[in-house]
Image (cartoon, rainbow, N blue to C red; front, side, top):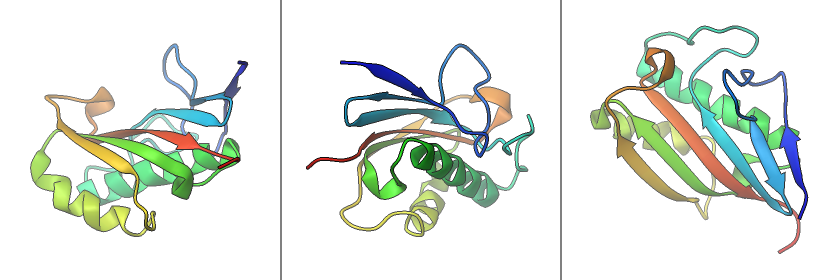
Length: 129
């Protein structure tokens, strides 16, 4: 099976030795996104709502570059430095996904890159049934 790197300037460039996403067959593995503003190496701000929204926007851009959308996501992992923000993640997530919602995990972590409060990665299946 061939693997194809996915890249878009509509999401932050990779800041390490990884791709924004890798497509293998009909499956796309989206790398973790933090709330960096595309084209800049700065966080969208310290407001958790703005950070969560930016992460979803970044994932949405990478999904589109791969030929899909967030509604093709089958698994979403959410990493938070404060699990008290999880209800807000649910609220904002409802604006980006429709049922059936993806399988999901929420993990509390001590720290994230660049001082971010949130990071998410995803697995998407596109095309075929």
